[in-house]
Amino acid sequence: MSGILLLGIEDEGLKRAKKALRDADYQVYSCDEADIKPVYEEALKRRPDVIVLDFTSPKNFEAQSVLRAFKKDRFLKETPVFAILPEDGMRLLDDLSGIGDFIITPFNGAELVARVRALLKKIIPTDSGDMIKAGDLAIDVGKYEVSLNGSKVELTFKEYELLKFLASNKGRVYSRDQLLDKIWGYDYYGGTRTVDVHIRRLRSKIEDRKHTFIETIRNIGYKFIA
Image 1 (cartoon, rainbow, N blue to C red):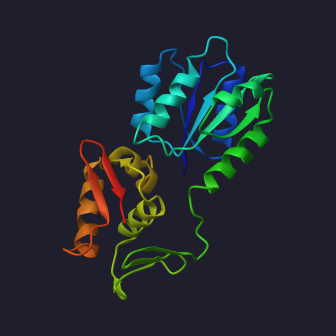
Image 2: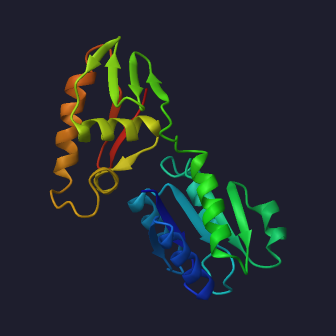
């Protein structure tokens, strides 16, 4: 399930956007603080797949400053940003470097979902039998198989899902909480230590002196580096 961070002062338009995305089974977080700092901290905490910025409310935080801060941050700069613009918002696009797509208010919820889905497809591979390769490591998505130097690697289902997710999002950093949500789901109460245990077991099966695929980002989480 993809995570979407919805940022803006909550009005009827933003409530409609939130409902449309949740009805489409997206995991939606929201933050309606007027100051930049809590908005920025929420983004760092959540590590969303897409950030939706609302530029429509006259009471809104300085969204352009937030966008600039995101694009300077090494953990957020690769996260695609979707903008909700006011009726005369086309003029803003000249100043909004880094926007992946946008919609003009008043908007249709179905169109919003379709545009966000299209933006996600650009960054998250689909499970269509593709091979995910990283050096000597190969993940056959269609067959649920992993091989290293041509030899099959025996993984548990969760180890496989964790590896596939990280390898499908090379270079992106995910916190332990986010990995727990994406691989184990909200109903799991084992705690983030579960993630560390599975990462350790996974490394023991696919890494050695010649191969390093998963990097630990201190105090944050993990990323796939190959």
